Length: 160
Image 1 (spheres, helix red, strand yellow):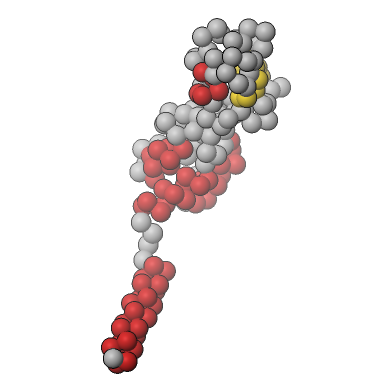
Image 2: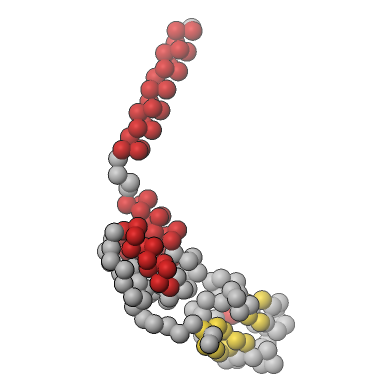
């Protein structure tokens, strides 16, 4: 019986060592690279890059379907980090977007929570049937809250 236990333990040890060696020597799968790119993105899920979120944009970057300079919330620092990771040249941001923040006209707000539900970074606070406001330091300026507002009480204000 002990012979069987020792044999199985030795086989498990050898298999573990072989897998460990292989994981260090083999190139990473493209899915791993997608995850690395995704980790460098700001995770605002704002869709300003033209993709519905950061993960689809990361996959497009790895597949060479998108350039690395489409993320306004990430800015030039993110472009630089992506270029270093992927061995690509640093590009200027595709569109220079003036930093802006959403502002709610609180006297017109009806508390419908449509804007709060649309905000990908939870920068809007307020309860149902009560006035809402924007946490300026959290707002990425993605404008996703503007369209759902039924009373048009949300506007974008430049940060400068």
